[in-house]
Length: 356
Ligand SMILES: Nc1ncnc2c1ncn2[C@@H]1O[C@H](COP(=O)(O)OP(=O)(O)OP(=O)(O)O)[C@@H](O)[C@H]1O
Ligand SMILES: [Mg+2]
Image 1: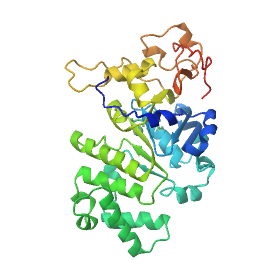
Image 2: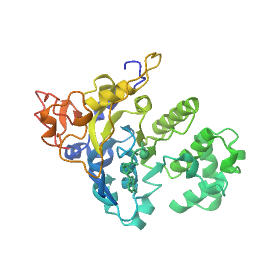
Image 3: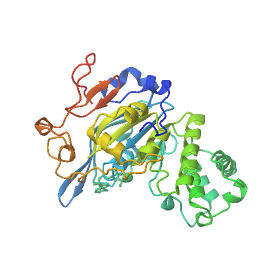
Image 4: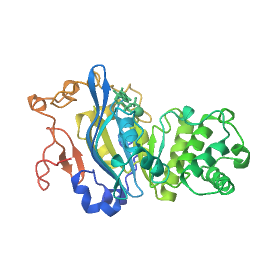
């Protein structure tokens, strides 16, 4: 575990704040404040509860990684915040940027702030670009939708953005169509478009998963560099612990639509507490590791029928009867490091449980 290249500087620890009602005190340091987010989709089997009471804050200029297996609700969180869910989706809770609740906005208002306050790199970069338009046309279109720039000003900005994401021969690439570019290059263009209007918060959904490992590392380095230079806050969704550890200041671990552990990257990587987080760490291949990683046995629960016990209990090697007595509350491990598990011994100074 120590071999994972985790990011964990002292400044990250100072601003670590795993969300919830207590986040008010640090409001000015908070770029995005998500409170009690609930998202359910209508299905033939009834309402599918994809996100269940999720709260977190993202400090200004920091990166929060949301880590979890496929189907745990990671993309649903981002799409709900951005306001791009299908019409019949039920969404509850709050998502505050600059003190304004994005979830209370009507579609026209949401469209206005998208790009400028908040923008997103979607999970599938290959379909994020329109094959019929050049790179320049697509960047100009995004800029003009959200600003009052003239076409010439937007064209200058497009060139600036290509230089920012370190595309070689940017003047030539502006005139290219997406199919003329490599996967890594296309993903840099997608990032450039997301940054076009200098958003306060960037949502990045598995931004490097579709890329080769070497290209993945370069794109992650670029994202981190841009985030630091521009002072942006980033929510990065990934199923890959090594990716989360390499870029994030904090990690929130998701299971079956809930955050089950949240702490600084160092806390999650070096002192994982929830049995699910431990399972993810064991399932992750370490550099130089020879033996096969151990996959977590079993599969995630049916989100249409979650029940009222710990959703991980049936897969958990440490489960006891207490795990079936209700959905565990978030408990303080130490400081701002919290875990939703009855096995966590309450920290002496922090009280028994923490509302989230
Ligand atoms: N529009 C929708 N209608 C119905 N169910 C949906 C919809 N979008 C997502 N879901 C369901 O919600 C659950 C969470 O999906 P989500 O895409 O958020 O998972 P994820 O953690 O992003 O997974 P992955 O790592 O595979 O991308 C899944 O069971 C999924 O099938
Ligand atoms: Mg997803």
